[in-house]
Amino acid sequence: MSAGDRVGGGRIVDRLPRPLDPFRSFKVKTGLLVVAALFLASLMFWVTARWPFRYALALAMLVSLAVTQILAHGMTSPLREMTAAARAMATGDYSRRVRSTSRDEIGELARAFNSMAEDLEAADRYRRELIGNVSHELRTPISALSALLENVVDGVEEPDPARMQVALDQTERLGRLVAELLDLSRLEEGAVQLDRERFPVRDFLEDVVRQAVGPAGPRRVQVNVQPSGLCVDADVARLHQAVTNLVDNALRHGSARTQVVVRGRPAPEKGGVIIEVEDDGPGISPGERSRVFERFTRGGSTDGGTGLGLAIARWAVELHDGSIEVVDTVRGCCIRVTLPAG
Image (cartoon, rainbow, N blue to C red; front, side, top):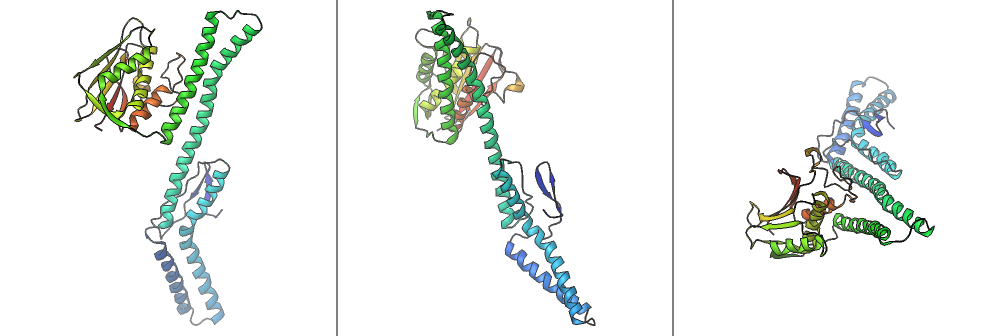
């Protein structure tokens, strides 16, 4: 590590001047370096013309080397920093960045390197968080299911319908978590291709509600579409996935005494559609509204959800170049999906 480099906060910081940074071409910089060295060497010969030749030559060489070191330092220091940062990445440290003040090809490389380092750091952080969150989410249903089955096997409890229903609920929770993780993985990898078609919004929403509530469930969802012939151009399966998660979320958080309302109406943009799902639950505080669409965030809920439903809904909506947000309402929570014209 050179004298101009120091370690601070896990990053290499270089504060020595880089006089050639304004030039956009590495070739031009190299040419200027050669010209500067030759000019100063000639100047030293002229100044020391009366000295013995060997002394004049030695001084000229020393001055040329000093100038070369000063000018070349700024040209090569990004490469040294990238080498050190790459070695750190090999050990799992993605926090290092390269000083990228140069405007030439090496400066472009340094900026691309910093962008890559940021992406790798974000991916590594996401991987660690995902492992921790998935482990936490799996632990609860597995522990409950294991305890129940141990009691049944040991004869402490009888395998009556009520206890088997508890075991089934925990198994279904595990199945939902695995399915949602697979869906989220496909969405984030871009493996899902949109198969757009035009279809009536009312028929679509009624089908979503029918599947979300189930044949034996209470009819607690009201569908309101204006105008009744409103249509949307979208991928039925992906949009179905998003709205189903919103309806399921509203059913779990809303009161059993009132209905969840699913609305459809035209968007201000011609050809666009707005879909809103509103419940009368505890709502989401303004400070949490931007975070509820992140993975494993429940917005303060402790109802046993996986915290992935709204994240999947966001990704499915963004695949359509749409937007999803929590909007103000007089009761509970209202989530709005805005789809542009196809």
